[in-house]
Every structure is written in C-alpha cells, then in structure tokens.
Image (cartoon, rainbow, N blue to C red; front, side, top):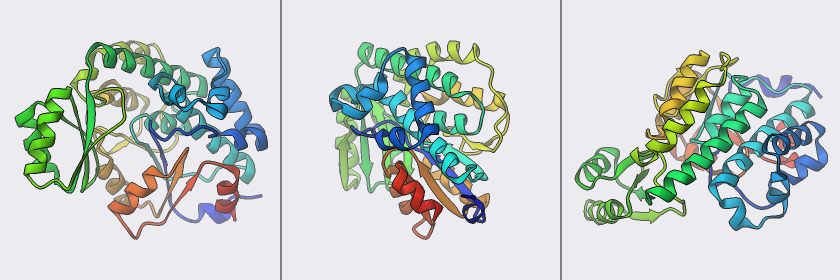
Length: 313
C-alpha cells in the first residue's frame, strides 16, 4: 500500500512522554508487524532484559518506575513508527517532528539523529539518573489549571518552585521541593487557579533539582555522535527548529533542568505550515493538549495496528 494519500497534507509528528504507559501497550504491534517486532526485540537486546514482557504483562507499578517507563514509552513510539512504515511501504515524511520531554528522544530517532539502540541507551541512562536525583533530593510536580503563565512565574519567584511545563495557556506545570510546592499551591489558589493537581511522579522533573542527572547524562551525550536531523526537530527548550546534530545535542544537554515549552512548540509548528498533527506512541495526551492550543487543528493518534490502518485508509 502506498503513502501518497497521507503525504498530501503537511504533517507534524509528535511523540508522548512519561506517564503515557499502560500495561499491554505495543503487544498487538509486536504480534502483527515484523518491523515493530524488530524494534522491540532490539530494545530488549540493548537493555539486556525483557522490557517487552513487563510492557505486555505488567505489573503497572513496576512499569511506572521511571527507569522502566521511559524506555518503554520510547520503544512503543518507535515500534509504532516502524509499523506505520511497513504497512504503507514507506512512512509519510513529516515537515517537522517534536516530542514532549522524554518524547523528544523518540522524535530524534525518527529524524535519524540517532540509531534505535543509541536512543534507547540514552533514554535508559536518563531514567536511571533522574530516579537517582529524585531519591537524593525529594520533590514533585503540580499542574496549575486556569492561571496564566505570568501569574505562575510570580508564584514561582515567591515560593522557590520552578516553571517546568507550559503545556497550554491554561495548563502549566511547576516543579520543586515538597515545601515549595505546598506554598505554591496556596498562593496559586489565592490568585485564581481553578485547580492545583499534584502529579503522580517520582520527582521534580525539568527543574534545578535535576541538575545532578543532567550532569551525568551530558557525559553520555558527549560520547555519542549525533547526525543532522533529516527533518527539522522542534526543541522543548527553545520551541524552534533544530537542524544540526550539534543543535540537538545542546538542546538535550539542558532539557532536564529547563521548562518544556510545549504550547510554543506547537504554535511554532503551525506557523511553519503543519496542517495536521500525528501523535505516535501510547495514549492521546498530546492530542488533548493540541486541541486546547488550536481547536481547529486536525490530528490523529497512532499506537496500534487498528489506528495505523485507519490512518492509512
């Protein structure tokens, strides 16, 4: 089957991050697509352990551990893309790619900046170092709903919390120590936030508390050669195009301690001509965010053979 029908539109591929994991993800891809199976087997070989068994069978508590969730979500994203390529004969070529936090690694693999095995090796080390930083300096993350970015910045200045994800105009995530977050919740509520939701994560991702993890990860990043992307990759930190391997490397060397500018990234991709977004990987979290950023933007989510076949049709 050819891919001409789905390449007529200017596509933007986006890849989800941690917290998208569910038990059973990737199983039908493994069973029905030789290309997806090859990716997932390569992930197991790279890790030296059967991550796929944990993905397919659980338990969810073990799958949710940062050290397992990160490579698992990336593995399903890359397997989905491989299955799409196999089913269509060749994957439709997007005009841009982006990923949310961890998803940025899936994006750079699809953009051929790194091989699957090098991507998985980086993601595993990222998860291990982040978990170590969480254990050494406990913290958390809180979603603030219905309060604008300027007000959140004021809350952070007054409490010591840090802006960590600007997902949409009305969904902003902050990170910090438990004490700073408790103070921030009270202050944000007093300033009009409709909801303050404590996220079920193991630490203060995308904040200064991740500095030890960033330092360790940078040593691994420096040891790997980064190719130039075959399509522009929109970075989380700057929300603009990265077109060389060195630019991607620089982006990743500050990503763990910097804010994920997702709303701006999606806005930039639309400005650059993206006409439809395709979320590749488990869940539909990014589709939900994009709908709140631009309700008229067409989008679809791919994470199993059924959705791939529907997209191709």
